[in-house]
Length: 121
Image (tube, one colour):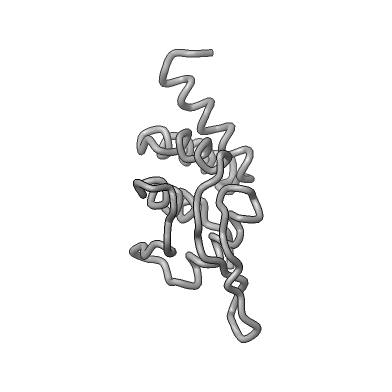
């Protein structure tokens, strides 16, 4: 399964919308299966974006996890990616150089795009 940065953003947007800080369950997102969401939460835990419980099974199609909460690093990323205009602009810039960027490079691009829109150097 290929990593989907749009799905990562959607999961973080959903998780940070919970009033108490706990997600309590994986989100249900249009256009994505439970396996895709669970696998991305598994990857997001590896990246330090979320706290999650491994829910992988030997007969499953891929490693999966259940979302518990968003980490400091996850909050930092979603604050950089929350604005639809900044997100769209950063994705367009990424497409212009080949489309796919590492997570850390995407976050740097989001921050640079926000600074540019704010008139900061």
